[in-house]
Amino acid sequence: MMPTLWPFATGFVIAAVLVPLLIQWQRRAAIGQQIYEDGPKTHASKQGTPTLGGLALLAAALAGFAFAPDARQGAQLLLVGGAGAIGASDDLLKLLLRRPLGLKARWKFALLAVLGIAYLVVLQREGFAMLHQGWFGGVAISLPPWLWAGLSLCAIVGAANAVNLTDGLDGLAAGSAVPPLLLLSLGALSSVSIATLGALVVFLWFNKHPAQIFMGDTGSLLIGALLAGDAIAAGWLLLLPLVGIVFVIEALSVMLQVASFQLTGKRIFKMSPLHHHFELSGWPERRIVMLFVAVSAAATLATVGGALFSGAI
Image 1 (cartoon, rainbow, N blue to C red):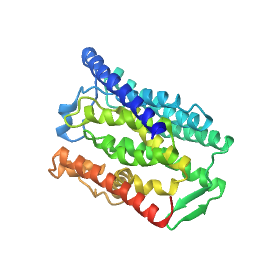
Image 2: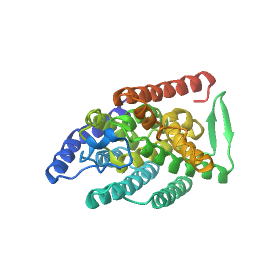
Image 3: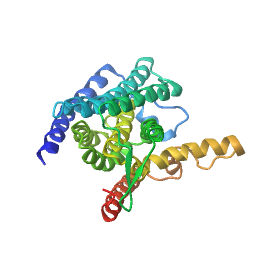
Image 4: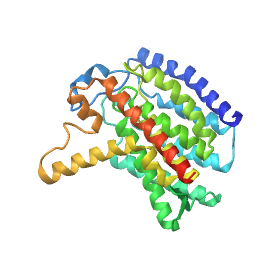
């Protein structure tokens, strides 16, 4: 209990202090979130809302490393810090230029890919490469090194972008991330991740509807990369799509929408990602968030229950 309690409490306190300061600073400077013109019209009221809340998560991750400053936690910190830095550069460009476009998508993908490779190289050098992945039925699937590396890299880049896509409603990405992050941080025994979880709980209080602050790409890329990193370190890479089903669905809705429009000229959804489809269908924002968070919690519990019952974990 104590090894997990102290990092969580530290992250909690850091966010409780830092998030209000970030809100005050941006309000005084009259800077904040820039809203896409082609997004739902109801989002116009969110223009100027303070952002960069992900900096509190990044600070908590740094503090979490102090509880276990070893090579494995160093790799986690490299992944979290790198993803947070990529996101922060994107957020700062938006704030400084006062436009909704920051880093181009191809640069985000490229930088995340380089970061993922660096993370995997560090893990392999330190002997933490998990070539045997747990699966239901107590089966340990042995993966060739090249396949393990490829899947791990796809998980890091994919999860980071999937959480980024999900971060479109007040409390949606943060709330949906809490259940899987709780499970995966305990599975990976990561003080960096547990401290980030503590900060995320506090951030969610300020991010719930109506949001006082957004996490920005700093937070969304950080959380996505961290979920993938925890899954890799715990040997649960194959369970990541199940426990993170909300983010998978959100990313798939975008890919299906794009593919359908390019092939047929027709759209499957009123707007993607999926949460925007529900918005344009008349669902209140809070109901959508509650549904997605409930699905995330249910998926996490189902993954735990199924894995425990079958002996996978």
